[in-house]
Length: 362
Ligand code: TXA
Ligand code: MG
Image 1 (spheres, rainbow, N blue to C red):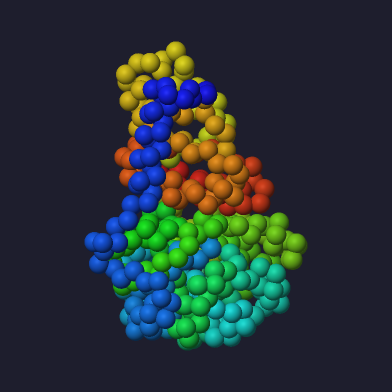
Image 2: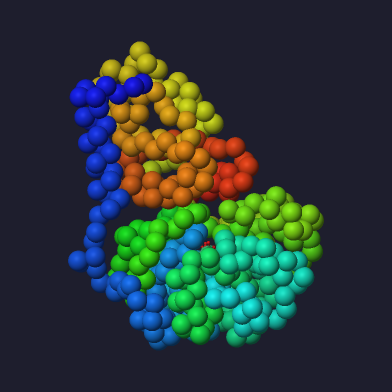
């Protein structure tokens, strides 16, 4: 439906957009207990002292900690409310630093890193003893990533340490992709946040196990199975729930969830069938609609009656904005979100993976 300039619907839609915008950009920095930094050197000094410091990366914000400091790592698990059997990814400044944390670089891992690092890729390698066992949840392997954002690599280089970093959110909540969202979840629970750009990709890195043969895709991300197969055609996706639980403990746990109940749809007409046009004027229906949200690639015909609505121009755009949209709808008190699944090319299969997980009842 076209919104007529000056119409009541247009005014309502504009008010709703303004409310959403102000929720997105609320600046709570005046009241925070966690230190907010712009200076990489100050943030690095805090990490060296065993502090928990969030920092921007191109995928999502990470919550950094010295990967060799067991006491600090235990604090991190508590701060996030993270189950201790879920291992952390270790972040390095340069590809060549892998020798700090891994005992060996299998040939296939070297090829993946040569093509995709720095970037949204985590390779699982045999671990060196210097990495605290709390980081790897007792496994003899370690996930290694070299982030693309220069500020993240400058921070890591300034510490001179391998930095373990899960996504900077409370466990089970959507990952933080802006420093404000990190603060929303973790203010007072962590020591610092290095402010920086919003995460450009918006969903977590691709995780690929390079320890056993053939290499196995444990978690899809912006680098797709096809991308990995262009380097190593033998690469396999995870097969079945049992294998998934053994190889990627993180998959056992609830993930990426907004408070609102999430429903998956394939086409926008499924949404329109839920609230047939003839019923839409009844107050009950109006009330249900106002507590519902939609996001997807197609535009529904009556966006202005929804509690919140985002239409994305591509799957890349959808992935970038998804977690922030989840947070906005939670702040608005929306009860249910209808999310459109996307074609599984490129980042699409990773985006569908996150949508399916977010829709799983806990
Ligand atoms: O993009 C990302 O990967 C972000 C940024 C901050 O780098 N980090 C992130 O971390 O998403 P986290 O902790 O939320 O997810 C780590 C995932 C989990 O699914 C975990 O099971 C898997 O990586 N993982 C870590 N180490 C592993 C290992 N040694 N073997 C198998 N899976 C591992
Ligand atoms: Mg996470």
